[in-house]
Length: 93
Image (cartoon, rainbow, N blue to C red; front, side):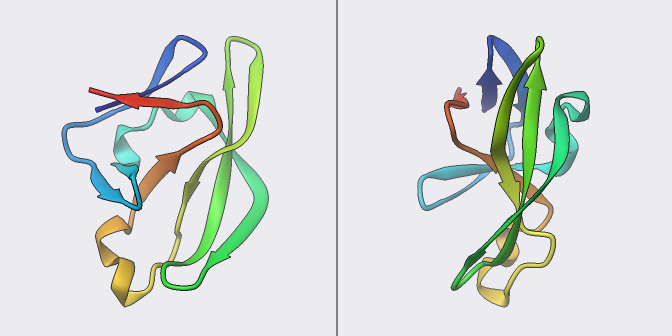
């Protein structure tokens, strides 16, 4: 699977975990140069506290377009150490 934004592959892996129609990529598969930590946090009742990344590709910014769970609940252990995308990031084979 590939995560693409602004015509650039920002993550690529053949080992994603799909939960709620989102592909969670291993954190080592993201191209870190495009990711900047965000101060945004949200809470999922069953996964835990999410943290976000803002993408910066080719001079364009996509605020909070990727998220991950630094600590996951027991129910969400399969996505520990993984990153998912939204806000126009295309995920495809």
